[in-house]
Length: 231
Image (cartoon, rainbow, N blue to C red; front, side, top):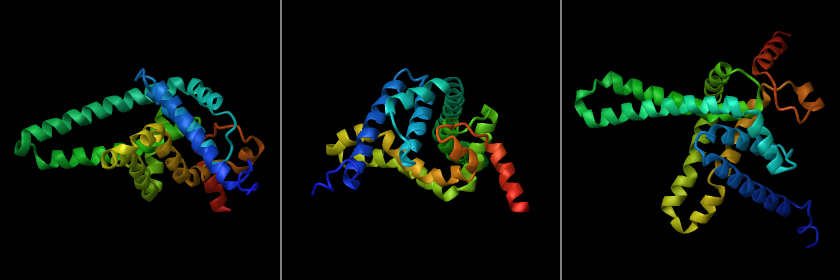
């Protein structure tokens, strides 16, 4: 019985991760309130969630605000770009709905394709900002590349974000659980899914020597992968 309740026992580790995710969830929610800081908040959320997945977490709050501060500029610009795209797509969708049959079928198809591509790519934008050091152009390009590279995982990542919504409507009595894990839960599940994809682009030697260095060039990793394949 003592072993089961020990600090290093599996049940206690699981409970510890739940506690970390709840704390992380409230940090992210608090930092999302100003709206414009949503990008930096989500980037920091992914930063810490991936650390939790890899059992590298130490201080949740300190790690969160470390990433929030370091990635604030890039993450905010990326978020504003995404917000503009979302608004444009939303207005186009509303116009298609109200116009009905007057809208050409090719336009509806094109709009749907663009919406799917944007949704797929958006699954990786903030994780990439949190894990790799790239220009914004490279972040958007690599997010689409990774979404297509692991399309099955990407679909599951999208499904993870639907879980809190479905639970909230299907079982409103457990809404407090959704409130406590509504952001950190899906992000943690996402991190479990994209972790293997990210490891394909992380220089192994650098990761071993500097476990806390979270800034690795994706492009360099691709070149190393190609060289290994040629050898």
